[in-house]
Image (cartoon, rainbow, N blue to C red; front, side):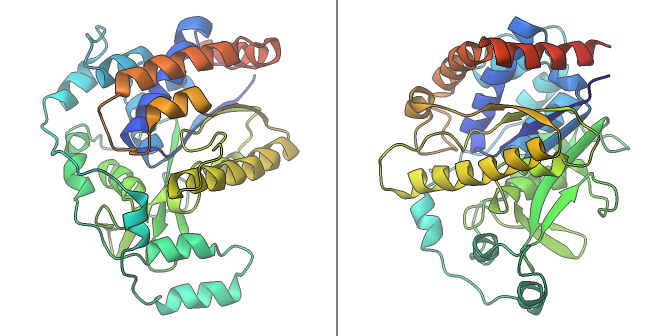
Length: 326
């Protein structure tokens, strides 16, 4: 039996819309049910999408909810979320993040850099040291608290965050990781450094899992999977603009290539969805903007459908869809 993993990358509110558009076309055209995959790895925005899928939300309802369209009869989870008011957010400008003051590294971070140099990521450590932001991500995601279940969602849901004190990636939901309420794990994964305040869980504080990697896809190695479907809103060709946003896309694409190579070397086949120039044009530079989400979903639906229709890609997606129906 084919075992399938789903990787949902970072990308803010706009990234969630991109997830919804891609998943909707896979559900509509291939009967691929992302709720039934064997594993989900979610980072930042992907942690929200992944949690909603594990709570039983259909892909078509994710898309409908994003653009405030009518939900299906199975949309009760999203109706409950919609009943909770969400504070408006100021525009997200990456350059402002880079200009924020930084604190000195904690002894644990210095020790890790010296003793584990091959696993230490200087950029991740630097972003973890950025001064706390002013916005409260826990408040933004307060609706998830009302959807808490006594146990962690099943099948496997791994949510990535970064420990602010040593720059180490932490994967909530993975065996061996300290337990955490799902709404706090998701909040930690979404806590963009310098924009949101870090999230405290137990004695540790955490920031966005995208600080380590916007996708963290290589986590699927060694998990007994045959196929990985990867949706990475922050990757894709960055084009020629020389700005912070294009640089972040190039960085995300570079990390994703390495992770895909690692999966393929481990015998895990991959199907990767990243936004091309047309999708990026409607996504814009503010990944927290809600102004053009309908266009993002429409464009990602069309582009993902065209890509998925390629014979070699369609065969893999049908294999994944058939595995979920067993």
